[in-house]
Image (cartoon, rainbow, N blue to C red; front, side, top):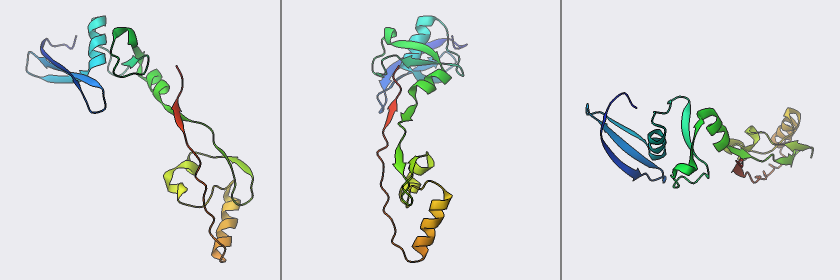
Length: 153
């Protein structure tokens, strides 16, 4: 399956993140560490998974449930899409003019959370900047609740 004969198998061992892996020792003395679910699926299929195209997914998203009925082979692109975290659209208002705006990714990053805003555009940003330079008070920023979630399968 790996182009070499396996002499010994160690594991499965559980890592700190809760995932399990096994260590394969080949006849030539080389070693390879792979995930336990991948090892189980390769043994079940009788072939190695294509390293760049295929991966093993837990259907119920429980990484401790390594039962074959809970494992499936899926292409890496689909797996990444399914396990990506998504954020709900956050609507706020411009702190200068009050216009309702949908916050962008840049307006939600940690760096901008320490600054005034959000603003609807450069015009309001410039007006606010001129106001502060002329001695106006600095506005406090309201930090929106950014909740991330998985898309349901």
